[in-house]
Length: 444
Image (cartoon, rainbow, N blue to C red; front, side, top):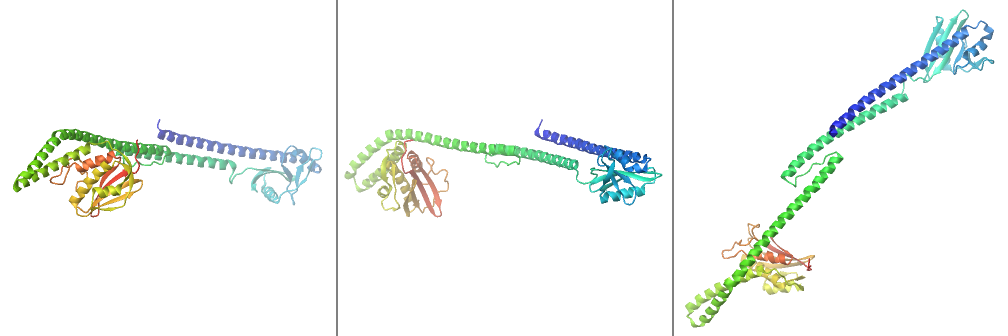
């Protein structure tokens, strides 16, 4: 059975129980009050009839005492002016005068005046009590008897208060149950919609139900979705890293082949051309210089590829970045300085590539060094930048006609080997390549 049906059943049963309880209380109180009034009327009738049968007027007080013996809170007397009330003091002592409250005297006087038959009954509310009066009439006159009863025909009686509180409690229970049903139904619907949204997007917002139990479930779903997002991001980063490593591995194999197949022939050609250069004509010397220039360009390409394949940094402590920048980029303005533990050769290779690219893009180039928890080296130029930032660090991507597209790819790979990173930023009219490196080297 669902929670909704159970709550509806609770509401229905509560209503039935409350109705039966209130009805029973009302019937019980009504029957109890009616029985007490009837008993009181019967008692005062017996008293006046007993007094009425007294034949000796001189023994009136004694006969009243006899009639009132055993009758608690009963007063009796004759209808005369003024009214004198008698109360029993035992069979031998008879009855003695007793104080009669003014309000009771007024009610008894009214009953004496209204009495026309042999027996007259009268009831009246006096100070929160019901005064029961009986008046008997015979040839000698009228006699009366009365007794007060605490029967509350009106006002906030205890049973009425209890019944009202019970009704109020049931109403509150019903409202709370209905509110719980509505909250559960709406909360379940909101969670169902949130689950559908999470199936499409793990970062979709999750509803916050009013029901505490459903709110905890929503909080758990939110944490689960966050963990799944983190797992996806780690998986994506791992895939990118694996692809990068695979590209590096392929580049290493290519570099090894290029070093074996190209570098030695290049060295041989350069040596022969250098030997021929002094013995040729000026026109031939120009052709030889052009060939030597191309051989030098090919040799730089081989060195770049071989440098990118190297992944075993040789760390030195206390490497000063400022002098290293000045040595690698003479004539370039430098701001700031820092000291860190790194491989100066790999760092120099990264700086060579970044400064060379910056000089090709602009004449206004500077290097900014900032020291903090990490050392940040920025190579800044005022060139036009690039439009495709995502492909900027991919191998063989270039915007230059004679470029190989390996410089930035190898530079970032070397930055990763130094446990740092290389990023591209375009701020206002400046292009920044920011190299971030740890200040201290950790073996882990």
